[in-house]
Image 1 (cartoon, rainbow, N blue to C red):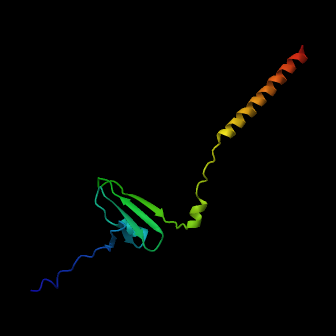
Image 2 (cartoon, rainbow, N blue to C red):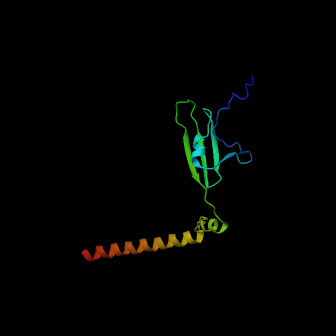
Image 3 (cartoon, rainbow, N blue to C red):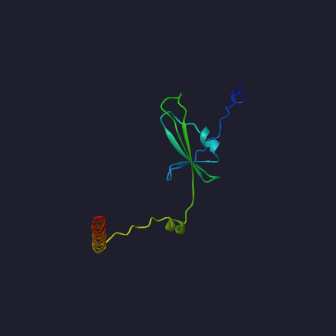
Length: 125
């Protein structure tokens, strides 16, 4: 009797095995495929969507009763010009001469106020 003709292999879902070791990502065709990818408890995987600019991260808790955390990241391309526009402007610092000038100006203003207060006192008397 030929048992091979009676035995039918079980149908399995398609899970891509294209693990790109240099990047550490598993290539998937869409978000649902990443969400359905089986992961052992206590582990996590990162997925790269080959059709859209997204990366997904799926992390399983240590208990099989915990819901996995699924995070979706959108990739945005930046060119050099936009990076240069976003550079933070370097602060300018005061020199010792600038500080000295400010001190002198403050002293002058204080003297003027003191003189005004003295003149007000004399006028009231």
